[in-house]
Amino acid sequence: MSADPITIVIFVAVIALTLAITWWAGRRNRSAASHYVAGGQITGWQNGLAIVGDLLSASTFLGVAGLLALQGVYGFYLVAGGLVAFLLVLLLVAEPLRNLGRFTIADVLSSRFRSRGVRAVMAVNTLVVTIFYMIAQLVGAGVLIGLLIGIPYWVAVIVVGVLMAVYITVGGMLATTWIQIVKAVMLLGAMALLVVLTLARFGFDLGLMFRTVAETSATDLFARASGVMPGLELVSVAVAQVLGTAALPHILIRFFTVPDAKVARRSMSVALWILGLAFLAMPFIGYGAAALVGQVQIAQANSAGNLAAPQLAELLGGPVLFAVISAVAFATILAVVAGLVIAGSGAVAHDLYSSLFRRGQAGDAEQVKAGRIAAVAIAAVSIVLALGAQNTNIALLALMAVVVAASANVPVLVLLLFWPRFTTRSAITGISAGLVSSVVLVLVGPGVMGEAALFPLSYPTLVSVPIGFLGCWLGTVTSRPAPEKEASYEEMHVKAMTGRDTVDA
Image (cartoon, rainbow, N blue to C red; front, side):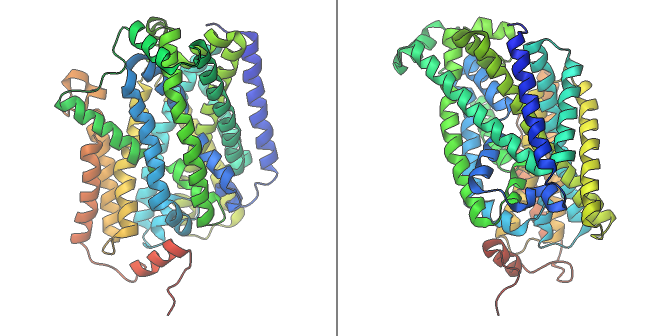
């Protein structure tokens, strides 16, 4: 593969399209509500497609295809985990979050706890998750774009970082949403085309395709994990993908962009159907690449297999299809980082600045200005960190984000909604315990320390998620409810279920 004029032209066209969307959205981005949550006017199908755009990141499209091509069925657990995660969100938290929240996850907790500490610790946690995930995306962008069109790593990182700052400062959540929708449509179309062309090579005979994979692959791509530790690792990966994906901040804030809880539920239904079809396509792309391109060629282009899908596209459709798939991968990165920036800037500007520093006294224009400054600052910090992390394993950075989200966010949100004894101290200790334990266990695990690891699992969710719940419980048994600083559980529960502010007498 090499840089081709067609590839460069299509890349430029993608950038031009996203900037046009940003300019259009910028004319409507005037209030805090429009900046942070698109004024709450996104429809169910629009939000569903945007959620798909958020979840189907470059690591999902390129990474899972590569895992399937090189490691086999193991990679499919990552796909299945994301789909189960969204089912849990649909059944448990979509409507309550929409009814309780306004701009950020901290707003959901503040619907019951009038504590600056709760808002601060959740804002910090959101920033940690967002920054880790964003660095992973930027590092991936630098490596991927450098390989695809031949520009230096640092140029690619700066270009993507600047673009994401422009999207948020000018267009806010409305621009982010429509960029994600366009990207989702492009990606789904590209995946469908790859599947059809791949199956056509085998006469649409699924049995022939899988037999070819089994006969030509150097490794058994249909083997399952065996042994205690590999089995525990696989379970821990599945738990991380299910709970962590369901609790990522840039996914959860999408429920604040719709008019009401009914539309939030409808958007999740749309997302589930589309994601189900997309995830069914992944084995055909991954195994098709293994059978047609070959594992040796895939590994030579990128040891992690991240270029398996573009290599398959080049084989099936020549330079034009390769350019299209490469541009789709680029659009995927742009859409995901835009969602991450809006989540992170909301935590800084709305939770830390407007709510804590200004104690809720900031006007609408001041909040929008704070959000734009925060977006530029987060983009700048992420660019600097990504430039210094060129040789860092991006899977490790993404792993950190998913594990922290599962360990710190899930226990607090679940117990807030379903445990009457939950208190202010419970929220603070639960978030802190989940955050600290997940980061520490990842740092002393095999992903960082290799064979010298002090903890045996790369994904420590089997331990860190229970620690998060334990922190919540310890906070409860060592504290008492404070009616002057906490709304009653009944009042919060009624609002979560109905959207109404008070309990009828």
